Length: 131
Image 1: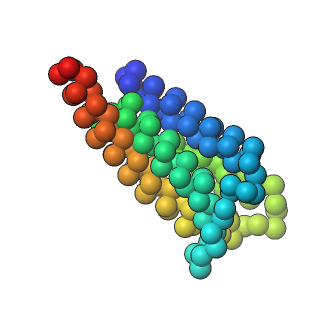
Image 2: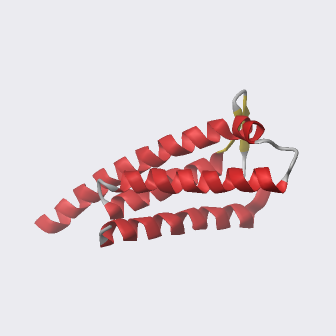
């Protein structure tokens, strides 16, 4: 792993932590959850994943999207594990059904954010090198 990708991962994690802090500080006023037939969708968290992947992609470059997907998948695996172990009546199937929309959308937006961030980062880097 080169320094750019490591820096992108660190920046991505810091951006996720910033969105979590904003969500914690403003609470219910800012943390809107949209109910859908496939589960609930926390809009601020989804926006945070996209922003974090975008920042990481801009810093990490074109190969960062693998790391963005891995980071989001790891975070969701930890969330599912905690939800199942803390509440014994919740099975993995129930937790998956409740969160499937958020999980899939987070993975898609992590890829999209990393891809677009890498494009913007490459364009900005080319301008900086030319000027």
